[in-house]
Image 1: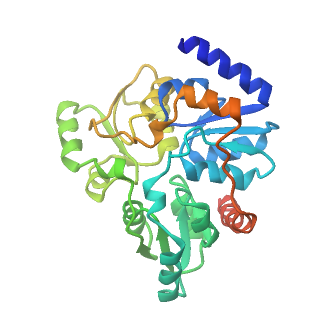
Image 2 (image 1 turned 90 degrees about the horizontal axis):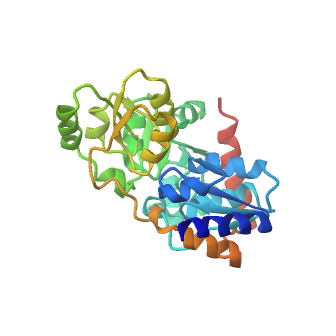
Length: 301
């Protein structure tokens, strides 16, 4: 039945002139049918470069918004409309305006894991891969960083700028504890520990490497170690095994699962292609402002 469903999806994709994007945290069967698998913003960039008329974004809501911001001429579909990001929802425009009023000399740097509205009220956006370069590129000595407190704390240790940290967090990465890392190290003393900067400070301090998902994949390919303890959502394991099939990847906690990411299924992808719903859009005024913050990020080298 799964084989039949995959074939139906591929046929619908051709009929609809569509491409399927899948974030690294999606279910393995979703990643396997995708045209592109990757980080959220990189996927939106890839989609914008194609001639496809329809984008099926297997991720969460803010990711589909970013795809629309870059490709307003395309139809952007999110197979499961309830697939949101709790961390992105922890930052809102009214609170951001209040914080900006308290710190008028600060630049607002927003992680791409934010809503289009928050991006539109930001000076510049960043990803987990380029956050440090982005902050260094901003002339302001004071930075309001939204929405992740853990990445904000890690960032504050990497720069001499004053980082005003928003109190948001990723509930999946927040579940990882230093004792999980220590237990995994004890059981696998020959393993390299790499964690996402969305992890709590104690976990970050216990790691050998701190990097985003694309950095983890690069490390897996290039590092001579045969075994890695990985501190991020367990869905990345599928891509890691494809990248370095001869290596072993250990996820130090059974709780490293984002339930929101797992809401997308093959059935929902198929139905989305059949009905061309649910459609994700962004009001044009918001889109233009958010696009400016994203474009400024892309100019940073």
